[in-house]
Image 1 (tube, helix red, strand yellow):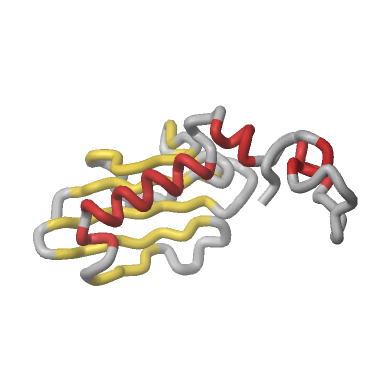
Image 2 (image 1 turned 90 degrees about the horizontal axis):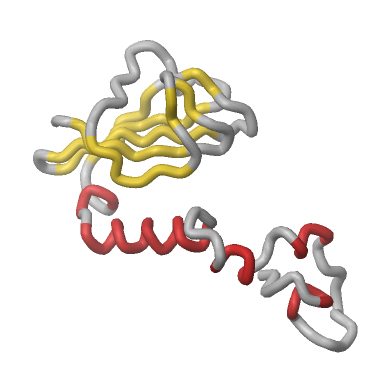
Length: 130
């Protein structure tokens, strides 16, 4: 983990035993703590959801659109709950497939979903009616 944008990514004032990644000025813990949309805070939200929603741990997974080149889509079912998970593994925005009902309460989201398009590397979890 790169701690900061300081010399040697904040690891040491001495000589590191391996090379430091070139992106440490932009990608580091200090930067993440200053951005409420960072992966650090996203993981905190996901951990909290796991502790408060049994659907994340239990129930059935129903894959959807398995042949899509960029989207990973599935439904999660547990008791009377149903969640729809959509993740875009592409750097580019992707149109959502027809027939993908994405109405409901947003549980968590990264990136944007607008006009039936999900942003590059975006993801959304929607609580839908079972």
